Amino acid sequence: MTLDPRTPVIVGVGQYNHRADSLDDALEPAALMERAALAASADAGLDGPPAADSVRVVSIIGWRYRNAPRFLAERLGIEAAELAQTTNGGNSPQSLVNRTALDIAAGDIDVAVLAGAEAFRTYMRARKEGVKLPWPKAADDDHPVRLGEELDMNHPAERDLGIVMPVQIYPMFETALRAAAGRTVDEHQAHLGRLWSDLSHVAAGNPNAWIREPKSAEEITTVDASNRMIGFPYPKLMNSNSDVDMGAALIMCSVEAARRLGIDESKWVFPHAGTDCHEHNFVSNRDTFARTPAIELGGRRALELAGTTIDDVEFIDLYSCFPAAVQLGAQSLGIDLAERQWSRTGGLPFCGGPWNNYPMHAIATMVTELREKPDARGLVWANGGYATKHAFGVYSATPPDDGFRYQYPQDEIDALPKRELAVGADAVGPADIEAYSVMFSRDGAAETAFVACLLTDGRRAWGTSTDPAVAAAMCDGEWVGAEVTLDADGSVHI
Image 1 (cartoon, one colour):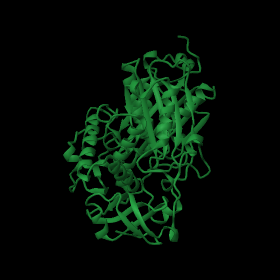
Image 2: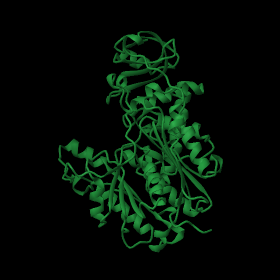
Image 3: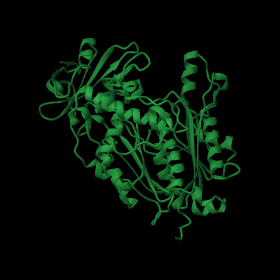
Image 4: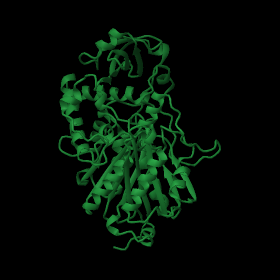
């Protein structure tokens, strides 16, 4: 098969975890990226970093460099023509691969270093100890090229009620999924325990995972001092683990450049297809908490572009910040979680959840595995926000017949049904609960209930309660479908 010289290919991958004993031997994110990029260069069989046209970095949460790719390029000795950084979101690493593949195919760049890292464990340790970290920042006017789509994901009514964090909203998806499945609370918790135990066992076999001790289903679901309840129904072990210092990097180039650099073809893994899309911006306007139509459409389109089906994809990595994300992704893509291995790494709770950059670890792991089975295909789904922003990639060590193919099917998703949100006086009166979560204090007390309701006319309305008795009551039994009363200020009465 004669390959178009502009065909994009991944030729090197690297991952690096740093377990500092103290702040004295900790590494900043740029240093973590440097080590991951050097590992990717060695993986490609290069003596050092390639003379890249572009250094592209996933947005960092734990340290605001202003121009993170500049510091990485300087460390690697790359005088890149372009320094670029993504917008925020866990979809960003896969979106970055999609964008880079398009730029390579178009001839805009030839060789790119993609990297991301978080030193959030060190950052939080420094805050706790009252230490100001001596890490650098660029000048106020030194900004990289911005890659990706900025998306306002919080409706003003959500912000007014303090519903702004993933840890508050993903449990709402979970309670809606539980009700749709017809399971009792106990049955569903046992189901989640089995899912997350399986995830921990994948991490146990992953040398790049942060936590490699497998957990039983009972350990996952048992609430105790080391596994306190965060947001009902999720104890700590069901949450993404951001307390990590991790970096990952990819080297992407054209086939022409790979040959010029002398990179052995056994290292080549090709992006076959990619898509990017998002649900309706605001959770307030989603048609239901129990379905993600953008994943359905975006995932299906990526598979179609690659000329395959989900049944023919051998390696799968589903974004796993919380159990609800995995279940929504699986049902949208047609994956039986009980029959198929759906993570290559151990996911964000056990492999590690370095904020926006987890999918780069998934892609790096996928590349390594696909090299061992050249005829196999792999699918990565990356997710940002509140199951909001999605990016998909289909990969194989066998080159694509028609080069890299890409779509952004957002117009089709924007035309899908939306719910109207009622606020203030328009939301007063009786309503039925469609989803809910209860947030806990650090000492284990239920303290705030967040409730999504449907009014009699089908509009959605939000409710909250800071009454500890109400919050505690909503942790006992099934409350989806229960009738409540809403006040104009959003207070909910059960």
